[in-house]
Length: 171
Image (cartoon, rainbow, N blue to C red; front, side, top):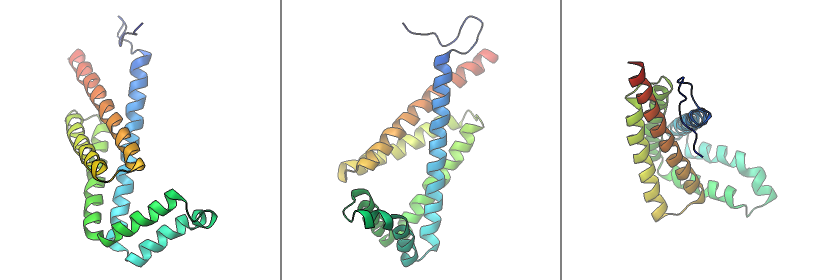
């Protein structure tokens, strides 16, 4: 049996509350992701390749001492070296993604109506690019991130419908 979204008194149903909480969690995820991309882009831009390698090695060295064949640690080490070699392009990419995500998250949090369709289009574009990357270079990590991004886009769509309906009812 499906629960209704709104009772006759106009009170939100538990289903709506759950979707709203998931939306907030998804937006938090996007905000953290954007912040990490911004920091990563700035680090790539301002630190030397040796300093970047040293930072990464500092964080994964304990894991590599325990298990020199650790898949995740070696993947991070290899990926970092690849990114460092193309650091100007990678820095620009990360800065653009990070700033864009943070601006859209701020607009969504402040409930700007224009931000919902903008976020849907932009995040869908980013996700489409990730799918393209997955086709050419499979990665479990990117598959998980892409799945989470698809879920976040669907949550934004649901929240946008709810916000538009609520604004129509208030008018």
